[in-house]
Structures are given as structure tokens and as C-alpha cells.
Length: 322
Image 1 (cartoon, one colour):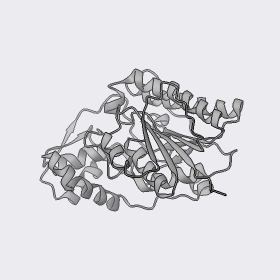
Image 2: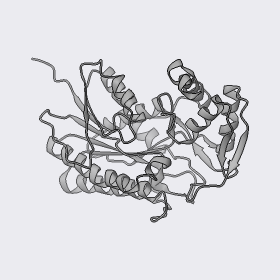
Image 3: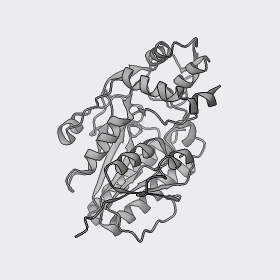
């Protein structure tokens, strides 16, 4: 009897996290259907995987319904702009992707009777007034601020997932992703690590928001993908949400100084006004991930930064920076 090969659908699969997830699922021997509309995903991430016969790309915007004649065994819903520079350019599309797009992916999971992992975010905590942030913290979010399309969009998506679980018994898995970095981040990603590395490699001023005293917790992409796969394997009754992030908190200024050191850059650190609604503190409580998933991030910030810098220095990307 022929062994059934698992088919995984990854929406937003041409994005930074989606690319890494698709690649690892392929390495596990799974068939992978990648959906992306290239709003922020990159065609080069698709091209890099097309040589694998079990990888199938479909250009699709999940704000439109998606139907598959092929049975789907698991869904990873990653589709949504995640960088402030991108979601603030298209706030309505971001909200539609969070709500309508998630609705369509939940309907797909319901029709195929398969689990769906929803990629939520630490942004659901807003500008927190408690440190660290545990999953029981309800957040401190400005519902009409310039970041609200993403913050509130993801909060609404979580609610929709839980209601599909309660009302339709859909197997949902919710993760809250904290700042993630690594190779294959787009050079115009707009987030702090990619910005600083690109500026340092160009020997341009490193631009720090405010005084750089705001903190973030940075996890390497391989750690995140490991947590995602462990979450998908949990029992049906466990929905999360679960924080996936590195609890080693760093100030943005100290991050800039570390990148200067690792790149031997001649760049200078400069400061610019703090954007509206920018969170001052961000550190995950990962107690639940440790106990339920047996997951703890392993890659240190220095190790991860060295790998990421080396990627940007590669000939294909470094020549494009000059």
C-alpha cells in the first residue's frame, strides 16, 4: 500500500518566514502548496524552491476564496505584511488579509478537516505595561493608531480562529511571533535588524529611533521554524496562543552597537524622532512554550547576526547594496 504523503499549504509562503518554513517542510518529505500574491513576498523565494517536484506555487490573494481539489493535511497561515513600513502603506489591505484572509483559510481547514496554524504576533500586546508579556496578558493597544491595522487585525484573527474552534471544532494552533531575523530577509524589509545591517555594510549612518532605549527580543529564524513545527504537532484540544520568541531582551541602541562591531563598519549612529505608537518594551514569557512544546530558542544573538551578515555579504546580495 502506497504511503500517504502529507500535503501542507503555506499562505504567505514567498515571504521571509514562509520561505524558510516551505524549505523545511520539503526537507521533511512533504508536498508543499505555496500561496502568495507577492504584495510583500519575493519571487526569488519561489524560484529557489521550484526545482523540488513536491513544491507547488500558486499566485493567490487569500482575501479571495481558495479551493483545492487535492486533499490538504495541514495549513500554515502566514500571509500578511509584517513590517510597519509595509502594513502602514496598505492598512486596509492588511486588515482584509488578517480578517477575510484568515476566514478563507479557516473555511479551507474546515472543509479539509485539517489543522491550521495561525501566525499571530507580539504586536497583539501593543505597547505593554507589563514585562515580560505572557499569553494571559490582554495587551495595551491603540485601536486607531497608525499600527492598529496590524495590531487589531491580528487580534481579530485570533478571535476568529478560536470561534471556529469552538463552533466548528476546527483544529486551530495560534502562535505569537516575536521579532525574528535571519538570512533571506529582504533588503527593503524595513525592520530594525535588516535596516542596521544594510546601513552598516554600506557604511551609511545607522538610524536609531528615539534614544534607542526601547527594547526588543530577537529570535533567529531556525528557532522560530522549530517552534512552528512543534506547535502543529500538539494535540487537537490545544489551541494556544503560545509565545515564540527569544526572552533575551536588548535595547535597540545596543543592537546597533553590536552590528557595528560585527561588520567592522565605519558607520555612525544617528538618532531620529520616535514613530507614533512604537512599543517601548518587548520581551516574551516563554514558560508555556517550554512546558508544552519543549521548545527554547538555541541560537544566540551574536551567532544569528553573524549568519545574517554573511548572507547579506554574499555576492548576489552585496553587489545590490552598493
